[in-house]
Image 1 (cartoon, rainbow over the protein chains, first blue to last red):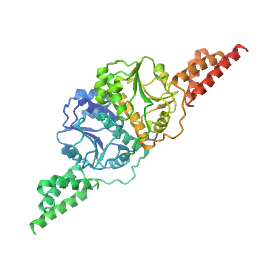
Image 2: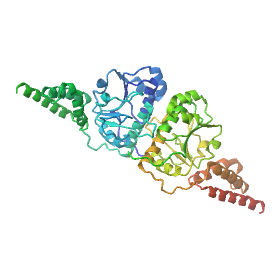
Image 3: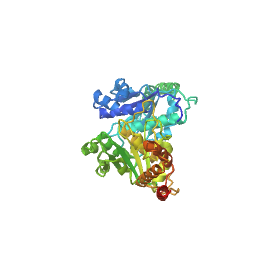
Image 4: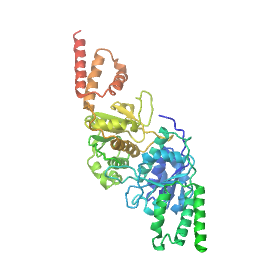
Length: 245
Length: 245
């Protein structure tokens, strides 16, 4: 086995609306098994630390003790620069899905100087289309016919693929850009919505659909912080132009 | 994603002395997620089917209902022709260990016309050296510093790698020999022990150590059924020779 040279300090598991504290604890154990030491929860249905700690085992107790809990997905994701969503479902209007193995190398590279969130949805429903809007990319774990994975098992496979990618291709000298944070992107999208409504490119009754079309391709671009500033300047200019035309 | 052409009907998960029925149920769910539909248990500490079924979920209930329970590892493994042990520990006198990813293609190929057991040890101790004697090969799941995987998580990763291998390289037309069963091998080793003691190659006080040395290399040979017969004939010949010399 090769030595692992990269570090995963920029990676965090984000569990959105997990129903069972046992799954949070089990996910923390999996994360630590694979070298990831940060876990966050958004609106957990039952934030029973005792039940979490029992499944986390003594070694991963620190992840639970340091776990940040949010009541809002946007706030939890705000500091992250790359957000990977996981889904079992292949709904309409979804981005093309890649496997964790296909993405792992890219995620490890990006995580060298970007904060990356690995986002998992609730046990019963998975991530909604609304949740997936925050994601730069969406991945699906391959399964046989019975596709419903336990939450912690899904966390394990994604973390395991990242560990394998680190072992196979340490690439800390490859160029990886500093991306815009989720907060910067959401600020940009808010300006964009306003500007596109102002100039009548978005109709108010269909603004969600129209903006999601724009988000769908912009999320794939891996925008830099200064590029979100550029876009926001463009939005201000559009509004100025409208007002003065 | 590619279509999966191979089948995993010859593969079974064998849990040796599992302590918690919840882990048996969770392992069954993982196995089915990845297309493996047979699970066996040897001397489970708590064979509470209700607790197993709860973790297995409705879909994997059939694996629990059809689960064979043995009180003896040799008997459980007897019909298998290739036995893959899993271990987290790197003790002395252990065979060189490969990762599940390195082995997956070979296991899928062999499973096309051989019964293959994927053997997992108890949660607290893992497989003992005595248990590993039955294994043709031993694999270790890569981890970061905290190497203690939950049992069902270990089952998941091995099964997941087999599914990935099936997706990446369906190879049902590759030649895969019919191997001797574990029962045939154990019969051969019993004859071999007796013959080697008879001729004084094994000293009675060190017979276990000496025989294990022989097992260590013979287990890597992938012996065919008729080759075990050949060896047993050779053993009879040795005893005859000793008696008549």
